[in-house]
Length: 141
Image: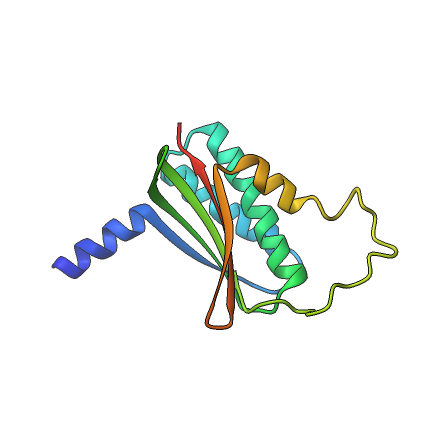
């Protein structure tokens, strides 16, 4: 019974979603995250910001990292109160040396990290056991 209660409580405060390494994965993961945030009754403003951060972190994992990737949404207690934590863990960089940006429209690429930093109260990257996790926390109103 205690294990079932722990599982139910975890589901109420944490959601894990695999990120398939295929075209269309970002929109599919974003829709799934939107459903979870709606189930959690997240305010519209926080939900909008969170979905933008989800899109940017998932896109980064698909474009720049090796699969598999996983999105984790959870509630944490931060310095400023309760925060929504968004994490994407992947298998590390797909290209150890930065690729040339020739032919890439700067209006279409390269702003994801700036967007995440602007929306998040806290953010960071951690490396562990051959994986990389990029995370951001957004304070709940």
